[in-house]
Image (tube, rainbow, N blue to C red):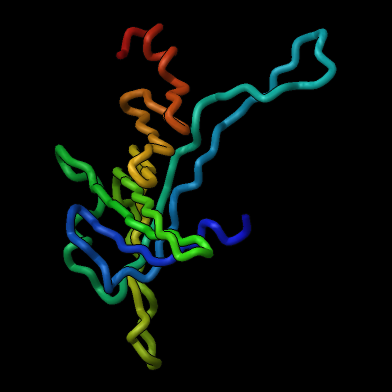
Amino acid sequence: MAGDNLLSRWAIWVDGVGKAGNAKEYTPPVLEVLTSDFQAGDMDMPIPVDDGMAGMESSFSLFGMDITVLPLFGLRQGSRTAVSVRSTYTDLYGNSYDLVEELGGMITKIERDTQDTGSQRDKAMKVTMKLDYYKVVRSGAVLIEIDPVNHVRKLGGIDVLEGIRAILQLA
């Protein structure tokens, strides 16, 4: 049915600090499986083979200058930056659903908007993260969990790397 999953509101937390009221935009990571084409001598055409995933990157913008985010830039000895985004989605009947995204990784870029002679109220600081963890939960159900360090790629509750972990005795 059309309009059964419309974004209503969202808020972001950076390293456990809520940024509601200061968040301007959020760009979720692109999920991409890298592939190679395989074609045996008897095959009429190549077929795609899963070669792992492309690196994940996400970004968010906060109004003004957020001094609690600046020190999180780059490599942090013994820890990684954790971000969570809570969103509400509604359907045409007014029912609301939650979606929680958990992101972990390293802040690799901080860009500030140009300061000019116009209004400064909408100026923001854009933060880009390279991710080493991503999880999406809707109404308590895990939809996606990608944890390359621990060899996990769960999609719809199925861990497609579980067999590989078992064979390599990593589980």
